[in-house]
Amino acid sequence: MPTEPDKELSNQGFRIPDHFFDNSDDTAKKISKKLTGARESVTSAIKEANDGLIEAAAHILERISRSQDEVSKALTPLFDGAISHTEAELMKARGRKEVGNPPGKRSDPIGDQLSWEQLLNRVKDKSKLWIISSDSDYVTSVGDQALLNAFLYDELKHLHPSLTLFCLCES
Image (cartoon, rainbow, N blue to C red):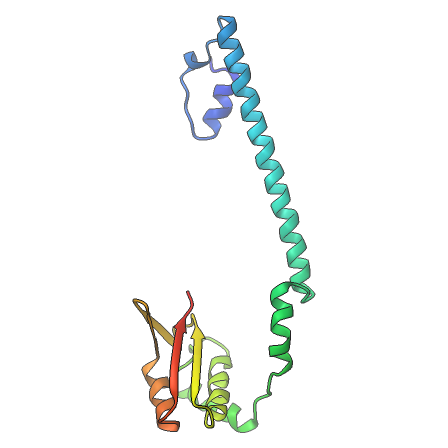
């Protein structure tokens, strides 16, 4: 008949033979008691750590929902300077989506297409452009090199032949 520690350890994916917890002498009882105490201590520590993680997650999610976290605060100046799209950019983005030109997926909203049209309108007087994305609609990673989608690259170079382009693919 399995002893209590054996039963609990087997519930954790371990199967320990019944005779391992032979309590027929004082030394075996002492060892069994020590193992039981250690298991209880570890179980308690895990529960305490899990409770702490849940508390920490709830706290940061509350801060994120109120834009009071570190990332939201860092992004605020960027979003404060956001420029609304023009009607012409929206029309071009719709046309791009309808014919299936990148960026963007058919099932996604028009956001990628609209962002690209805005970028095309604002890059004309720039000498350098960094594109940092993990979105495969824009950038593909080949080893350590990130490459802009060929269609988008051609579009940029046609519009601005002297533009120096840098890509970084964040994974």
